[in-house]
Amino acid sequence: MKLNKGILKDYKKYPEKVLQFGEGNFLRAFIDWQINKMNNEANFNGSVVVVQPIEKGLIDKLNEQDGLYTLYLQGMKEGKAVKEHSIINTISRGINPYANYDEFLKVAENPELRFIISNTTEAGIAFNENDKLEDKPQSSYPGKLTAFLYHRFKAFNGDKNKGFIIIPCELIDRNGEKLEAIIRKYAEIWNLGKEFIEWLDAANTFCCSLVDRIVPGYPRDTIDEVTKELGYEDNLVDVGEQFHLWVIEGPDWIKNELPVEKAGLNVKFVEDMTPYRTRKVRILNGSHTSLVPVAYLYGLNTVSEAVQHEVIGKFVRGVMYDEIIPTLDLPEDELKYFASAVLERFVNPFVKHYLMSIALNSMSKFETRDLPSLLEYKKRKGELPKRLVFSLASLIEFYKGKRGNEDIKLADNQDILDLYKSLWSNYDGTEAGLKKIVTSVLGYEKNWKMDLNKVEGLTDAVTNYLSKIEKLGIKEAVKEVL
Image 1: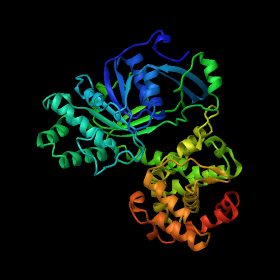
Image 2: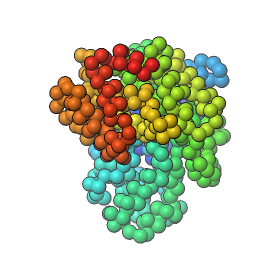
Image 3: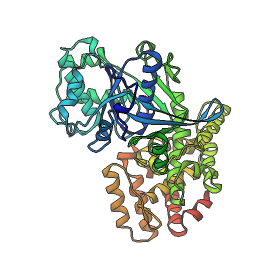
Image 4: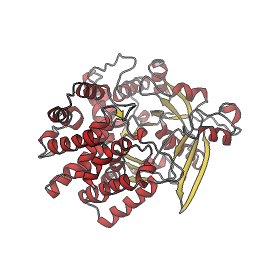
């Protein structure tokens, strides 16, 4: 028996108040769970229409299950290890704009729609000069959103009361501001008119936000046990930790429409989210991202394994305490306390957080999460942080696509995959050949927003570590930085 509304006794249909770009594990374990909680405990009375932001995704599976899925929350709660699960009754339907573009635009005509949420990975909030208003759909997320907003504007004749509260959850700095800037750029290039731009400004509120919950996602290793426990088949089971934090930089009045406090949610409305973001992105996400290529090439598969491993655990603690924390300006005791809490979350006894699930778009993740620490360390200490540099070398090795005789299923933007495929396929086995690979990767300004070869000593240091990884293997090479 498959999960659907027929087997959920208290299934409810709510007005569609939220448009969500992204149907992946994170948003379902974070935003949709919170809306479910607000419906049950704070009378939010709203459902989510989910839009699939890329051509291939989970929308068909979601619709087959009437938008329902089971969420397991597992980890430390009030000092105790807690494992609990519930069916999330938040999503009304899913739309694939690549197959049903008109249905996607039609949602803009709903007067009750009020919020727009997104998580399209770090690479998602980007301008694509090839996007056109007449495309069905536009390739980029901001392109699709601009077309949607313009349809809304026309459907309600520019009514200032029909705008949106737009809260992107992508893990990039000033995500709301960047999304708004790209939409304005499309509005100008597509000649959508002065009145539309005025409506964008007057009727819509773009918020910057920060999200924090570790979400391993679908429990593929234990799905048979999970199915037996549940008594029904669910192709979208999701797993997250107990901890959650959502920091929203926006006007305080949003609380009147989003009853997070009444629902007991850990959501903070702040005037400046910068200290929260820097701490979280550098320590939690930065250590995650720096860990992945080193631990995976070492032969490990999960975050918990890696953090508890004698060698790799020492590596990740060194990254956190010796190379990231010294680059931050908050009180050292506070930073160390946060780092300690993060390590506890990493070894959550219930959660198998696969390294490969974090490896998606690793290049852009390293740029946003680890490069700032690397550069700031060099600035403050006058030398390169050896573990972060080793991680960068390991990342280049990771994109070779091999772990021993096993193929690595690389997942990144096509230009990144093409770059590495070309570089590694033309590698001649020499030291000069390795330096050519490193120089090309570090000089790929589209990803790094700068030429990293200009950072004193970095090219040679990365080449040196990459050479050791190639010659000795990761297990011997990592000893260099320990």
